[in-house]
Image: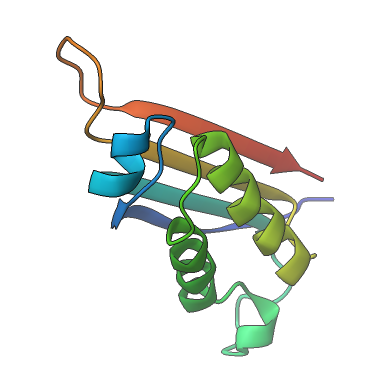
Length: 121
């Protein structure tokens, strides 16, 4: 028996937030990019019923709300986003949240720091 997996994702959502271990990061803020990737078993791809899929507008709202709450660790931010999505969309079989911090308080040149959390049912 074959199955179709439906992937719904938001990629490269830009935020200016106040996450960081150092006090100045929570005062000055820094840019972030967030990706949210979800998977579910596809039930009816011929339907236009939003209840049979994941509302990506809602994924954005959850992510935006959590990115507004300053935290020291990106792992905590990613965990909060992931847990809210898991709770609101129990039909999902996989959720990944990736947060990239684009400006780092370190010497040296790099593209970004990244945290990724993945939940699999």
